[in-house]
Image 1: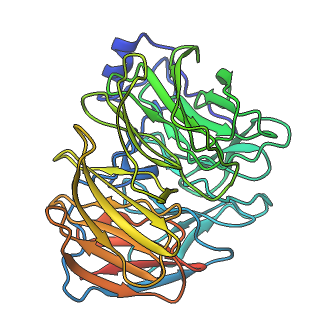
Image 2: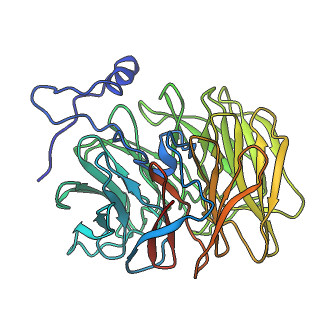
Image 3: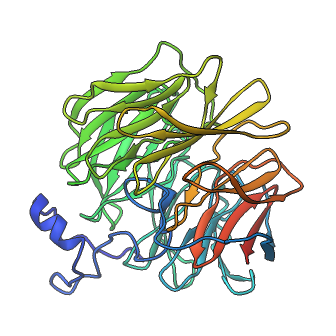
Length: 405
């Protein structure tokens, strides 16, 4: 049953207020801000920093607490609800709810015959889980029992692979490639359309990110172009192209990251860039020779950008100073390693967690020294999530693993 939870649209001042206070509007259900949880959406928050308020596993010998096996490869990360329930996109469902204590299934949204490919779920405070699927739909699923609230048809022949973003005004943002036309949508929590913008290019695996004042939403296309749009009506404010090189591949993750000062950061195909939010001018670039990038950066509270790149089969993890893009340190991963859709997670103490090749690492964010590492059977295709104090969730092969001390 579709539930009308839209009480707006509100002016931006009230939208910011609504982000802090939950209330009823003429008896309607709660507004759909992101859930108050350790990791409710892609890279933990609506600016996609990957910075957690919790400590991850400290080591030196972390252990696998449980394993959840499902169909398909883990090409996207899970998200976490307010009670700790884990929501994971899976093939032909498209979502499973998992008990964080033992890794057993709480419910699955079976019978829907839709595959979640790279669209990490987003969990709303209103008790809904939003996810894109390869049936061209953005789904709203009830977190209590897995029933479908509504399905928003994005476009013809346009898989919704983007991890949805939930804004403080309740809007859910998602994009679709749609035969390389690049369609971007804002949808109200009742399933009605707020606005639609044709952005062109290939957003594919990209999750949009919000400015600190929630007035602007950023998205990238083709691994080379950053676009800013007005959150009120979808009007394009500016776009900046970083390079002539482009990719239509569905595998990389070129999601933007936004700092508390409003600056935008984007690991494009050929390098990492910092942008001025007033007009989109490139402030700096970091472009090591013959190095490719295909994962979103993570941004620490201390002002460091963490991102992996590779040349040939040699992977290097970089720590950059966000102010000017200068190199703070780098760590060369032993063995074969390509950083593709493997975003890092940052613990409250500055430890940085990422997988590359078959190894999961914890590095000291200050100097890049190895705190601990774990060998897995398969190559990592998604990033870890800090789901509770001292706990990581990470996908490898077709399984999801809970890592604890």
